[in-house]
Length: 165
View 1 (tube, rainbow, N blue to C red):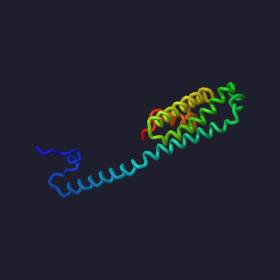
View 2 (cartoon, rainbow, N blue to C red):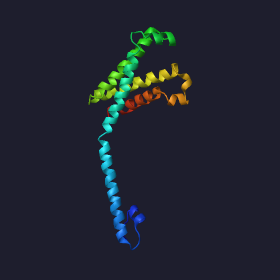
View 3 (cartoon, rainbow, N blue to C red):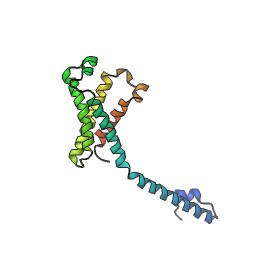
View 4 (tube, rainbow, N blue to C red):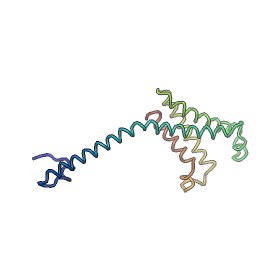
């Protein structure tokens, strides 16, 4: 009994072998085109991670730097944070952004560990920001349309993925 592929059974048309061969050839060309497209897009996989790394890193550098001079008066006055905690928030934001960017260029276990560490710091920062600054956002439209949720997700991405692309 001859073996047929699933696609052979679907397109086999009885005695019309010419149509069958034409369809089989078109299917082969389509699969080849998909394969070439996949190979082309694989070249951009590292670029996508790099763009995400730079976007999140720069955002945290900007947010941290905006809180200078230390201690950040806005955090101390508005949220009532102690000056030492407010200073650590600003420094954590600034340094996690710098570490996230720099560690992407270190192709060794240290770079991978630093990337995961920066991701962990970002997740911790963003979790506390949600709890302290935006407790009314939980599971609302405001949460999912804010910049903060994407920074949180990006932190999780680098915590889980590290430098592995």
